[in-house]
Length: 320
Image (cartoon, rainbow, N blue to C red; front, side):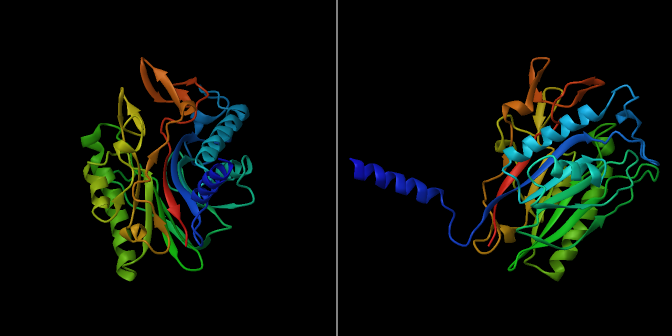
């Protein structure tokens, strides 16, 4: 009996051991909902997140928000690559890294966008496993020149054997209604698609991870333009409630991860095909008017001390 017990234990340990030569990791995306510092930035309309404004945003609330984000990062198991949106500047991303367990392992890709509130995207990556080849932004013009949108932030990251192109998006909102606002998201989608096309012309086997809050559902026109080229990894079935965001009691997917077919091959860097996950741990949820919703930082001007109005998403990723 003792021998059988030891044999069973050995099989369990073997099943938990990664295949030789492979490093299993997580790639994720998180809309952190209005991560502003407490300073007044010249040229940006960030007044609602200043200590003297109605929301009474201050250092204590800011630090609590940083702690919350690091709790989510820990739940994600410290992603190899993490895309973030709704961050005000590089300094707040640096505070995320310094406030958790990423200080000695992760680096940042960030560019200032033209968004009037100062909202940007960022990429955090594990610099002990990946090196940065190059990075940049995709900037596109909105129909209303006075309301520029967030840029698409991208980075080429590589190991000794492989390169992966990561793109982080935060497309124009649905303000004014889905139909009325859709042309703005189509502009963003065509810009992203054109960039992907240009990269695949140069290298048809390029490995791509495309992620972001697209402010559109998977079957809307703008996301479908991207899914013509890349494989969607996040669906309603990826989570407990059928989405990453709740609007008027209805859940749906606004936060997407898509990958190139080259990342679904058996060799080199690759993604597990059915590994897309919407995280819905209890601490990320709240109840509002009888509905389960993401536990957000503010409800209107009322401070709720929550995490975000979006749930984070991840995929399982293997290096060489």
